[in-house]
Image (cartoon, rainbow, N blue to C red; front, side):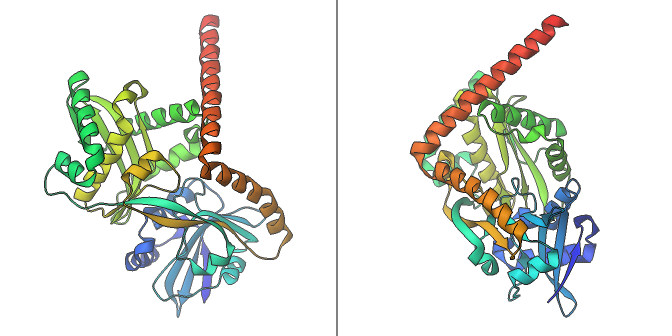
Length: 371
């Protein structure tokens, strides 16, 4: 096996076509987070982003995107943003994890959403986790008929709230592929407020993440398109979602809504509208991503499994990194897996978020007074 290393931006058109072919030939690699366009988007802002290309008899047959730091510590590309990770390869291709790490000059490789079928990494997986998905099919009628057929338990309540929203605010309409960049900014603003309100790290406070999302929004290719969907009441945006799609899979990524309209359950409306419209637009699978959320239990049709762990070579840097990272991941997973721990942790984070928001409001008020 011949392995060469490249920056994502150096991928030629023939190499991207070969990568797309590998995605098309194996359904487990159809996720848009595994597309070269995602790696290229991350590579524009992450200096350590690389792609290992595996060749057999000179033909590219496998693609491994990753990030590497100066010490040889590797991470799945976009770790923390990507909901699917793998070495994408054509059927029948075999490879060795240790040989791959040596070629990439990695002492250790960290992943948290690894495709379960990645056999060479299997011995390095420390945990497998559910990743809910929705199998979607185009409906014979409109949205109400699809909703009643797909989610009879939710249909009555959701349609009732949509009618009330229409009466109170304005006629409800949904745009699956909204091209107005102002709506993307609105989504980011809502999501930032949600992160702060719930005590989470505000991803959109990091300029490079804002730039990546903005870049992917403008990518429109057969195997990767940034899809912004918006639910409106009249001319007022109510909820929005942005996520990448491949030819067959839409990844649920960033969803947020106007908190002033939260009593209408706009987030749930958004997910349902997006799934129905995705089916009409050629998508067969909506990947909701790893994580225990009540709405995912309501919407999922089945679950995939993704792996978390560290693939490593014998190296002191690898040993030290694993000693540092593994307890942190273990504690987080323990909390998330047990409602008795998860619920108090959520309440604590929300309290922190409320205090943080109140402090910011007080500081802004004081600054306004000084001006």
